[in-house]
Image 1 (cartoon, helix red, strand yellow):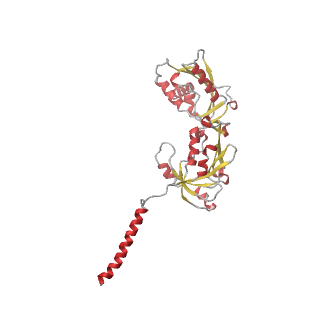
Image 2 (spheres, helix red, strand yellow):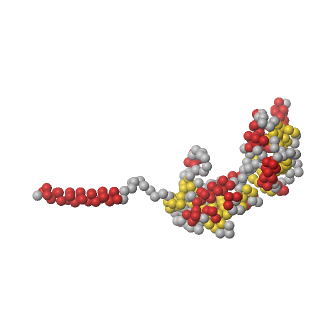
Image 3 (cartoon, rainbow, N blue to C red):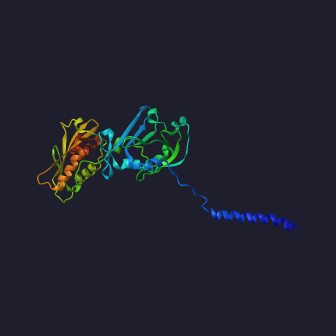
Length: 347
């Protein structure tokens, strides 16, 4: 009798176990399976192709704010981004496009505070309110706003960010964001750039021709470097070429604003007949460069096409470089200056 009484509950438990096992088989999934992060701005992502203007405003706290805006010139594959604050000078196309794509791919991880009083602690206060947030605002061709996002602090401390090793491109990071029209904040993950320096957003191209065809470099004092077509450059010329190729303008302006009356020429002559004459002036801690494009007699069709492209790209512009570029842009002066210094030390 006792055994019969014990078998009944055991049978019930066994039947229950079989039912649960059956349910587990039907609804089987990994225990650690998680839903993938959601796209934070799905409406914007669906309208990415309609973006014709991008505005980025950095909050500088007590120093106010700094705004950069980029407009698209044309449509289709030939469209190019321009920097509005620099009289529509060509922008860094890759960086602008990466920024727009980063907004579209922004992933939301979890909700944070919905209290406006806490926005300042997360770096989400708007730039105009003495905040340190960064506003990313995209508009269509009619000037209608598609999205306006406030980017706040990174989740990790600045010390941890500095210790991270460098990688190709922007690294995925966790940071706080909110839609400007909403008070709810979120922890998100993405690659949005934070660089407030205009130099990073300018097209870094230099007014030069095909490096392999360069045969002579001269300045106001005469010929500096020369080689026969097909021959190798000597060590000094190679060092200069490396330094020249590494130059990146830190700012630009219209050429007629800068006084080039006493400019020093730096002439680059190419084997196909192309001549690029850089007019260079130093003004205190900066150097300005203007490019004049010409052709020698007998220039071939490729040289004429290249000259036309360079004129269209650089005519009317002055590029600004730091004073540290003096040794490359004014090599004869730099050499003489070093010689004078050495003589003075010897005396």
